[in-house]
Image (cartoon, rainbow, N blue to C red; front, side, top):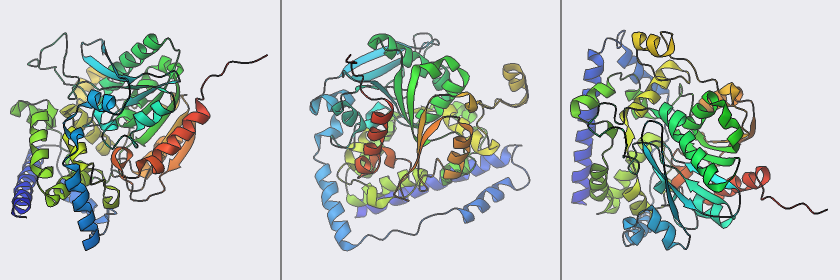
Length: 444
């Protein structure tokens, strides 16, 4: 217990220092006038925060036992390829190179059925599809249904740090937002998958930023509408005016994130070696520490204590989070401030140079013709239902609009919820079978 308390005090101290620095830097920014910090803090009074969740003694004992059991799981130390092989599936590793030089690894569980491409979210990687357990992992569920499963990785995450054109010391290394992921990464991976499989189109499943990048690609590169036969949006993130996440709310008007990163000599967050050390420190020694680790996730994504799979917590947090660029975070923050779904805001003069206008243009999502299934939840602090509704009204071909039946279902529950298979993936598979069934030979 002493260790848990010490770690709690230490993390609260770090969080306090972080917030003080954020506020101080914001106050020094000319963009923060007219008491905007006070206005920002005032917003929190109206946020629908949940009541404190009280664990019963029985729950505490049961969850502690499950967590301690999970510490012996060898999956903690297996990488994604090893996890796929361990549970009896074949795996292939493929690589493609974007036009600006990033080497993107893709992981395939080959099958004879329709090609299905999975794309992860912010601070994530392909491994996050694989850590909730073999009976619940979406790639295994799809593979069991005979589908040809591919999992992509975005530039600058922990598996896609190589660039054949620039070095890691170059100022442009990882100086990318999710705009480049949508314009360059997804097209490169999708073209490679279609060429390799000999197919004309594929099914796309994205979570969080994986949906954002898709909306960028298909609204700006219209030829890719024809290459996607069906898209599943798990927590669709585009408009973000009503985002609830307190940390995103605090950071959203912080316009110097890249300058701060440059001063610190970093372009991505969080560094992989740091997060592994923190995960071991917070999640590897006591049940109380694991709760602290889970709470850090909740502060970002929403509270859903009953859906924590305590036995899988040690596995999940040894693979998550992955790295993302600072610019990805800042671009999301700009959406909160602008209230629109727009390209990256470089400032008045650079916007004129890049876009021909002083403000960044909006993504024309109304041009997307791909049939889309949107999954959303009131408990999602990233993809607020009001913002999802805005997206829904602008997309011309939403064929399924599904509210999660569990009101507390949060942003990361789409990957890690204890009951994710029955609550979500069974429905996803049903929609896939309706929209993209196996091809059958006609009989005359």
